[in-house]
Image 1: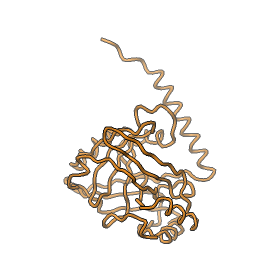
Image 2: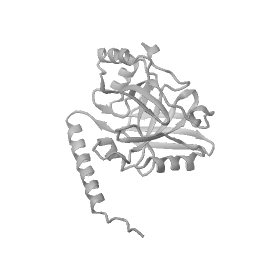
Image 3: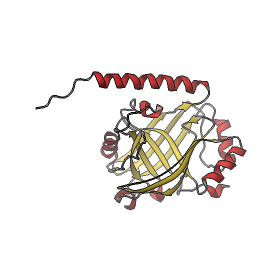
Image 4: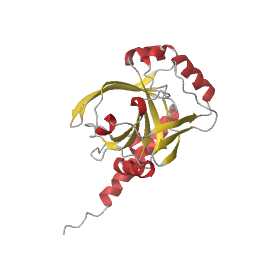
Length: 251
């Protein structure tokens, strides 16, 4: 079953996702801190998010995730991202070669893959197609998302030699022992250490070492409903603030 996981050099993540209140501002911040210019993607139709990216060695990627400015609906993570002034790690993906096969294997071992979605769209940047889900039950950001790419758009940055690498990827959680057992059963090499719910990466960049730390996120059990309700209230407040904001003068 380990053969279903796409290994990328010394790591096994396909993507590490950095949350930010604004994708372009987050990409500019990363460029200023690291000396590496992220590439901006075209927002996926109907999706709440907009991404930028930085290629890593062996095909892995840093994704910079912010709200899609054209999306007007509610999504918990979209509202949550407004709290991130600078890009911070919020979750991560592993890539697999057989999404359905991995889901079946994980479910048999008490780690169901939740919130499964399939996407296949064409944009000016190329065709983007994948199946993905969350390693459950529920959502904890130290547990990986699962993704199988069917088509992945290219970019000049993705085809150029990578100028940034991840020298450390660290996860911690109070329930580390139980989750490490699941990781081992599923064939994951990554381990979680004892401590508060957190994610951290250390980047080796042209401007030296850059460390990014992020508080862990959880949406699981009865607490998920309360957290979602609080974010919905925040979303409504933000909408009212936008409506109350005076229109810009026309000169």
